Length: 412
Image 1 (tube, rainbow, N blue to C red):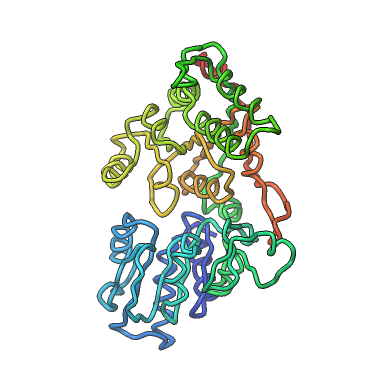
Image 2 (cartoon, helix red, strand yellow):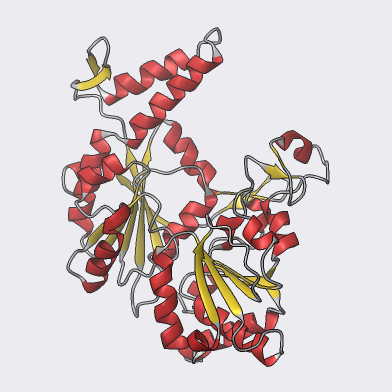
């Protein structure tokens, strides 16, 4: 079957599964907005909605608004003029009555603040996401929900079997349950997405450069290794007050997010791999040292346009480019630093697997050995069941482990 025919078939299956209220959980490149427009046509044909009705589109950022209007013009077959469309970020809490809501990246809305839009929304609801795994109860939160009106912070009661507490996946079941799933793995297997390979770049703390300022108040200098390991030893002191251990942990984490040796490593990696590359990191300060093309605030649209046109080959972001944005021709993704979050790595993978004939995308993950980061990397791969128990490991298709020493020498 031709690729386009297969894609249309899968989209039709999603529309058929949607029956007025439900979430379509499909991998990047599936055409979720197009599928949502087809769901609206189904609602119109079923007399659930009528011409002139209000349709609200919710998204995490305003950057999605331009994409919505463009795709409505391209794929909406007159839907733009047929209905009264409104665009809102999840931070908005519109109280107007409307007949149908679309929730882009609906997992972003499952918070105490934002879920108001779903709970008090339209009668007909279309949820869209690319990052809820098949067993989507994996998405646990620091705040668990006793019901959709009140929020509690006790995980203990949930884990002890108190059924009055629910997690994010169960909350989604209440408000806009998943009705269709199309995974990243399915997309690659069926040829709707490009395959990828993962390379783990094993980085080590620098021991040679002693010019890193450790204690600013005492003007004490040392290497990255000195800085990190001194705090690790202090943190192991059982007599140390809890708040001091927290402070030491924060200092160790900040160091990992801003390591000078890692900045140098990533710059060498960029020169080695070539091609259009997206870089994700936790700290904007470090990303600015790696490339001039860091997305932050007002330069968002400008950099995305330049990248898609090919006038720049590198673009970097902390959060803004993880989801909901189409970036053309990406060949590589470098993850410089991260939290131990399953959804992040799925979103970041989604940036590079959009289909291009013959492309094999490459994901590079920097792991600093013998630090928190090595632990985070292992946790990031873990999948959990609805009770929080370990179920399996994400298949990152690891092709090779690369020594940072070879990259710093300019070789592979």
